[in-house]
Image 1 (cartoon, rainbow, N blue to C red):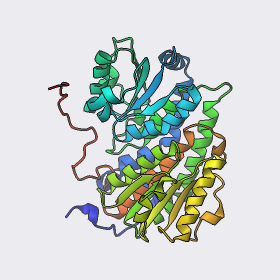
Image 2 (cartoon, one colour):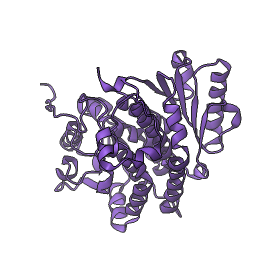
Image 3 (cartoon, one colour):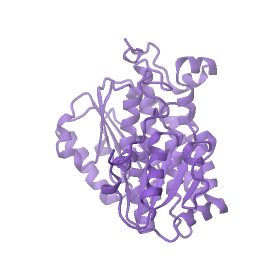
Image 4 (cartoon, one colour):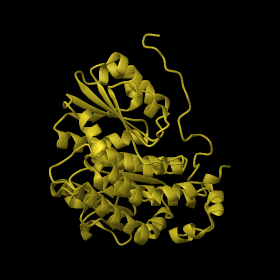
Length: 399
């Protein structure tokens, strides 16, 4: 029997986990994942500094000049969900139709899903070595020559970063090496790629350093003051989790659901849905062993719809404990055992940045649940998954 099905005898908190010597952390299988989750506030500051670098700003503006007819964000797995987080904000900020399309879908169906015209394909990748990464770019360079390409990656030595150096249609932005997570699951790589993509929108008078500093303080406070409360929730008796998000936060919900699924080896059933979409069938699956995690919108009009749904769940007595993430969370939507994660000041940030905090909360819940079930967060799937997807052949169209 896999150890993922055995509960740990010592359900301990964050400080105790950090107190173990590095060798014991490695032996227990959580050293890389915990370090990479907790390093995020510091690495966000580094990515913000990178985005302010004049050479990088010139690169990004060149990639957007002239403005494309369409922007397509692509990636696989977690990287695809970064695109979902980014698409609404980029479309609003740049005034260009923007959508996220999975790299696998582009690889197999690009003719029917890729918008026609002079577009920009933004490839998001931790390693840049997954087969789809270069497969999509190479195919579109050959068969959709009107598209320009922007690669944002955490790995300077990956194939995606190195294969197109001589092609003027491809711009590459490489993030700090610390963001190239060693753990199987993406954590700091996800949030830093998301932050870098959000940097494509340059608003007059914006100070990204100030916004990121405020975000980092909020999330560091969550790590310092609420990690143990989230650990307690992760140790409770649930068998399923539903993650709720509106707009770009649906991408954060998808990512958080994937983290829980990956880190528990499927022992916890997960679902990501919009607040309004939950009513159309998925609500029927919520029972008294379903944890509800809600990422709340800073937009008052959107928040009103979200609160309506939460009140309905209370009225129908659906779901168990709730974890709600946002600023100014109304007490009326919280039960006595629910956990509010307050993020003061983030409601004023009108882009994808608050989603970084949502994802960090999802990471902690999955991390602690993995430990509770006796798993190893650094290698949670018992060899089923690998950090980089195994090689598979690129098949020719019509073959």
